[in-house]
Image 1: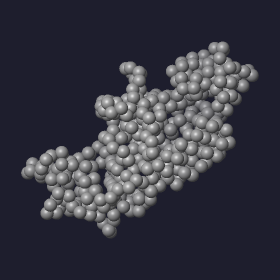
Image 2: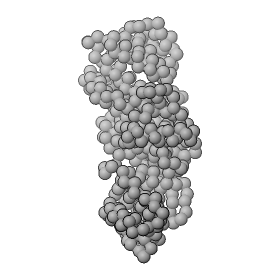
Image 3: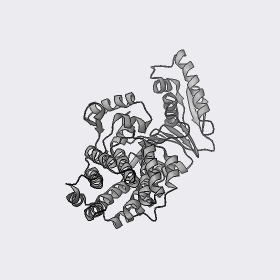
Image 4: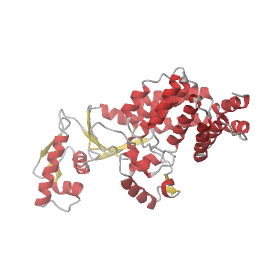
Amino acid sequence: MDSLITAAGRALAQGDVLAALKRVALRNDAPALALRGIAMAQLGDFERAKTLLQGAANGFGAHEAIARARCSVALAEIALVSRDLNWPARTLESAREVLEARHDHLNASHARLLQVRRLVLIGHLDEAQRLMGRLDPSPLPPVLRAAHELTAAGIAIRQIRATQANEALARANQAAQAAGIDALVAEIAAAASSLKAPAALLIARGAQRPLALAEVEQLIHSGTVIVDACRRVVRGGEAIVSLARRPVLFALARALAEAWPHDVSRNVLVARAFRGRRADESYRARLRVEIGRLRRSLRGIAGIHATDAGFALVTRRRTDVAVLEVPFEGDNAALLALLSDGESWSSSALGMALGASQRSVQRGLDSLAKAGKVQPFGRGPARRWTAPPLAGITTTLLLPVSFPND
């Protein structure tokens, strides 16, 4: 490798993109194309970066397997940053295996981190944590150690483990300071600051107040029965019952939890679950069926007793009941939570992350666009959506997480 390529590579590693481009801007050999592609990606021109990296991958010969694998890893990172979640994950794993076999452990670790970050983005936390367990960050350079700890913090945040997240962010900050990359330091500081912002509203016994993530964690470990309107689950101790795909049951559970320890009339339950005006015989029969289904779903967490007026939630061992509400109004809160990360998303990527159909995502985006909360750009398959950050709150509890019984 010649001196200009070496110098450009060092400049990119230090975050000096312009210095790197000065050394390789007029060259069209495969190594120069690869470095130019990485530089353009760092400048945010992802389409140009993909073209350059694909050209570099084609330009490397059959005996240059490591170089081609590195191009694949760079292309996967561009796809992740540009929220193209449909890229073939197997291609990245194949590149990682090549790098590992050729003892390029640094880039193999980077490829593994990309795999984990994609899994976190779509809410597959158990698998992400399993892959993270195979990574040893100690031999990595500071910039990759910072990325590793940021990813670990992201997993902990979505698992509502605020203490672990703060510890990981502290380690990430140390690594970023050692790397000397200001943008990375700022990203970590923003992540740490978001942990102190309200993550949810607590509704209990007729009162409500905002909770930071650490307070949500304490509430979960307190033994309180929690109807989580952010993730559409009911929590009780170690048990988690997902009602994300059963909106009627969730509406009933929430109504009962908000009224606890009192009962809820049949008229109110019919209005909340079925949007009916009053509980006639038809609605009463339907309500009995759905209450029976909810009672079976929550078995082991709480019971539901019939009263003269309606139904009441009954807990065991004098356990309290609370509702965690979204910290801002709207039926499309999860969409806003993903879009507020500052990246541009396609509707297909949003659907993959949320586990929803592209059509339902599109309806939500159209509704948000009419309200002026999101903005589209581009046309057809190239159309992307963005939204400004949500000031004063954190959207942690609205981000996708896969539960066992989803």
